[in-house]
Length: 211
Image (spheres, rainbow, N blue to C red):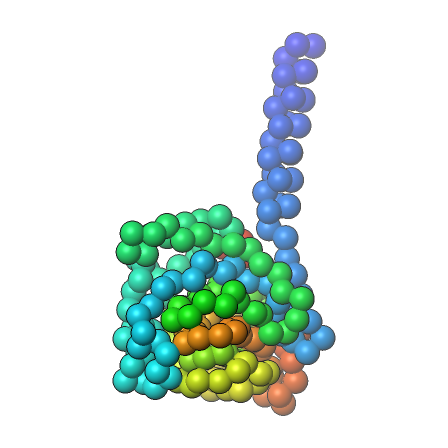
C-alpha cells in the first residue's frame, strides 16, 4: 500500500508539472483584421542623438549592430534578461488592446518585440504588412524581410514585404523600431496572396523547445 501511495503521489506531481508547463504555453489568435497583439517586448535600448535623423546614413548602424549576443536569432521568454552595455534589460510578455502596439515614449531609443507564430502546415506566398513609428526592421526566422527608414507616426499597412513562407510549426517574428522622439509603436499582420488576413495561425509567447 505504501509503495502504491508513493506511486500515485509521483504521478500526481508529474501531472501537476506538465499542467503548469502547458499553462505557460498559452496561445492567442490574431484579431479580426489579422493583426498580432501579443508580443514579448524588450525594455528600450538607449541610442545616441543620431536616432532622431530618420535616414539610412544615420540609422543603418543601429539596425546592423548586435546589441546583445544572437540578437537577430534570439528566442526569449517572459522575464528573460539581456545585457546591453552595462544594463540588464528584461523581456516582458505584453498584450496590446489595439492593432497598434504602443511603446513607452522615450527619445532616441530602440524597441524590440518578438512573437511566435505557429502553423499546422506550411503557408506559402504570404506577405507581412507593418506600420512603425519611426524607422523599423523586420525579421522572420532570422531573415530580414522589411527595412524602412522614416520619421512618421504609425499607421496600419504602411509597408509590405515580398512573398514569404510561414513554415509548419513555430516561426519567430521580430520587429525592431527606432524612436527619434515622442510617441512610438508598431503594428503587424500577415496577409495571403489575395491581401486577405491570415487567420489560421496561433500566436504564442513561449519559445519552441530545443531539439
